[in-house]
Image (cartoon, rainbow, N blue to C red; front, top):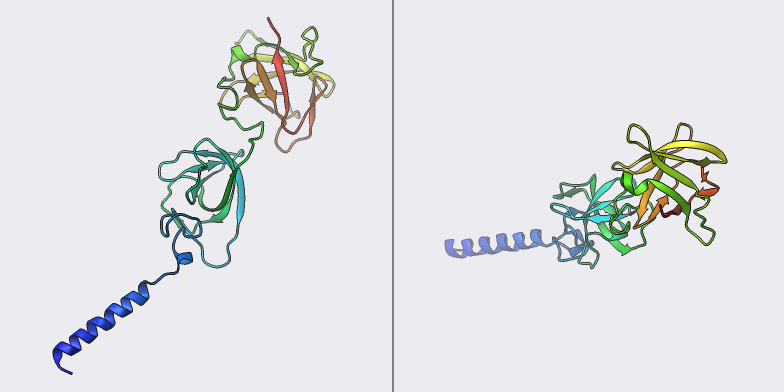
Length: 240
């Protein structure tokens, strides 16, 4: 074989070898199973059998990838196929944790297999769900009665007033006994009591409603005779 034929044969063999080495099945490319074009996803799938996990939360806009924030405050970057689900939606997502990802936010990146919108729980603090009303001192102060046909502002379930230090103080009955607590209107609004009573999260139900939700991992309590459980109890403010 002359030198020209040998060189051509060698080049052809090397090109064939490179082509074989470059072949990759769609399932082995990052994000192919997560949807979109092969290689378009933000996470690299782990090898072996997938371990699917399910989370619920609200989608937030991230720097590189959308981020899921759960009711417990955990965050996960999301790598998923084309979808109508977007920022602000409350969703349930199922997927597996990526081995590697260019997403810099969140505790880990979840390669999403399935995602769907669901109704948010009462404790979800989305401003739109609260009618755009912030929980402030002025908002919580006044007399409140549980929403319903039996609502009677002549006998309010609790009163919130300001003390000499400007704090909002609630007076009511907890588990049948008179109690005085503090209404926290900070980043995580709640009704706070002396131990061992649990802190009860609150949320605006604008323009004149206040939802009192149960505490996490605590016994159910009654507030003015109303059991605070599941999605909580909504109270409405009585006219001044």
